[in-house]
Length: 241
Figure 1 (tube, rainbow, N blue to C red):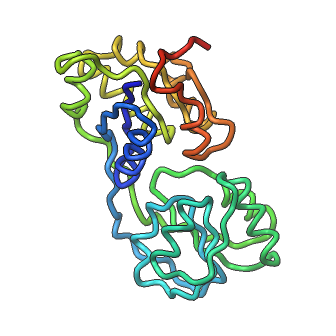
Figure 2: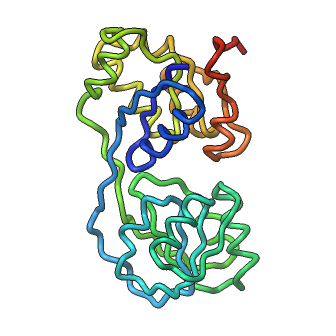
């Protein structure tokens, strides 16, 4: 299959390698880029650090490496360990799992720092606050939308370099929405609609719903493994759902 990966780096290159190993043809054309915000870290002390994305790890350079870390999933936990955090606890991949892990590990009343993105959801902070924890949210990074559809994506969707992509992978609600917006602005809304859209979660699919689109596939768990498991084999055409 010919697959468009629109997630930002460094995740896009990693996903592309996995797809190529599976035998798929890959178009890497991110519609978002990750950038640090430069926002100061809230004053502590804190009893633990919450990471809902591996994108926040780069901003934590000045934090103590022996701090207790709660990571949303395996990829984020791996990045935290590579950054030399020595006490990393890993949840099962979504914000609800992460809130449950924290609540099972620490008593209510503890203070936690959530290193998050500017564009973030209410969870896990809402559930943890309701459970009696004190959460300080630090907007450590931001996902900036590209000003226009990447040229590689525009050419591919116009079939200028041969057959274009058949599938688009969406890893976040924001990237799905931005991809749709940039395609519309480039006059390629029809080509975008014609793609089969594979989404990491129902929340990601909601980014497409804003444009009247439904996902062809939604992963049963918010993990890359579950998303890629839903892809058709590369040696036969996709089947309609």
